[in-house]
Image 1 (cartoon, rainbow, N blue to C red):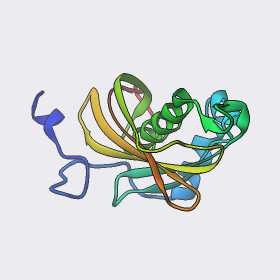
Image 2: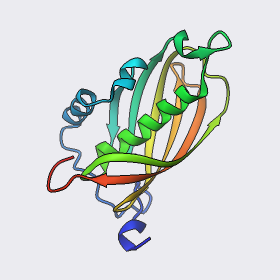
Image 3: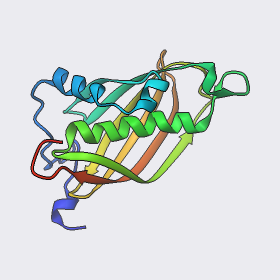
Length: 163
């Protein structure tokens, strides 16, 4: 990791320059317009971007179609919600990122996640030129933390323009 890759990516000792806060509503609208189809299946969308916290919040509504054992969401869908929030944090905040390729992900299932409404928050912990380290938390609509994740991802930059 070189000096450029070793820049902190959040408010604690941050030297990293995030995308300009500009019009967060426009950034959110652009990301939702370009969201991948699987997010429609999970009724997912970007709800907020916080430059100070280096985070992105996404909302989901998961039906019983994605559950096993009556109403417990299958773990792959829990992972998908966390991965989406972490990746969208990179799209929203890291300048020039056009693609985020997960290299590894670790998910901790803290309690069963049951069909219903969720919000996932993805945080940029550190971002270099080509590698990002992110974390995420998944909450029920009433604020219970049901799962957490950490990921290492390859950050692919757009060539010669906006991501």
